[in-house]
Amino acid sequence: MSSSTRSITLSQPTPPPEDHFTIYITSIQTTLEAPITTWTLILAPPTNEDCIFCDIVLLDGNKHAPLTISRGETFRVPFVIKDKIVHLNRMCTAPVTKAQMVIDEAHFAIHGRQVWTLSFLMALEDEGIAPQGTVGCYENQTVVDETVTGSGIM
Image (cartoon, rainbow, N blue to C red):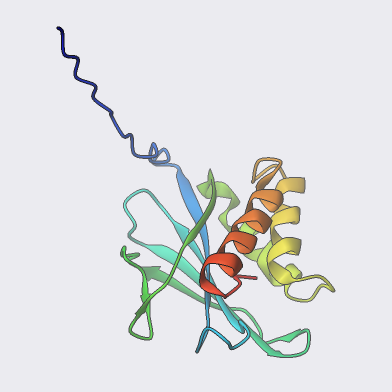
């Protein structure tokens, strides 16, 4: 009899090149039953230092507060907001030269008629920053999150 040993190698995602950043979106709920009214968009370089954080806050109905932007912060994992670890959705990587365009698209998306996250990701796809299919992937993540945790992330 011969015995065989199998080994499985798990690979980590390849970090983006130094001249790229990773785009993350996270949402914050006060309770599982509460609607989501706050999101954070994060533009993180490979070192996770000198990041850009954009806070999006829904005031009421479809009206959002102006985009709040902070620069130069360090991104840490696990990501904690208000003493809670929050789930991060990794959307894509983009060249550093596109950072202002990404922020501009977030600004325009909060003034649109659709859910801001979908408008934002559609704009990134249209600009060639995010690969085609990013919107569908994000929508699928929200359905899974709603099913598993009872909460959405849009």
